[in-house]
Image 1 (cartoon, rainbow, N blue to C red):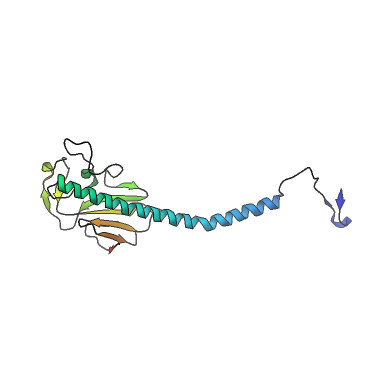
Image 2: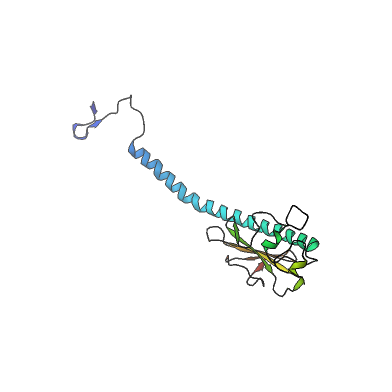
Length: 186
């Protein structure tokens, strides 16, 4: 059956056939693509913000572990690495810090974690005298830092020092033992 003028005849769809035309489907796909293009940067930024929050929380955990190490194992001195914090003291079942923060250089939530002696710190207790058999001497100060493993996982670096002061670098570069290029983070 045809309708319209003889020059522009078109076939009507029988009422028993239902569904979408190709053009309708293409319009829906185009709208989904536009929405995805708008939403992707927002989701990426939310993921980066979440990773940064985890990095800051982990630094506070590392600081607490260092305080426990200094009070019970290091005679007031601090561990030089996550490796030493992950060692269990003799006669106990728990280390000062748990997985996944058990080795320097570990990547968690897109951020690399490291602990090092602070610039100018000195040995307070030889490694052999620590209660957990640390590989390195207990020092008078430490710096723990977290920096993004790649630009897609974070844009800022964070650090914490012996006193618990938080620091930040806006460029995402690894923070050194002297906290060079950092600003105080509140």
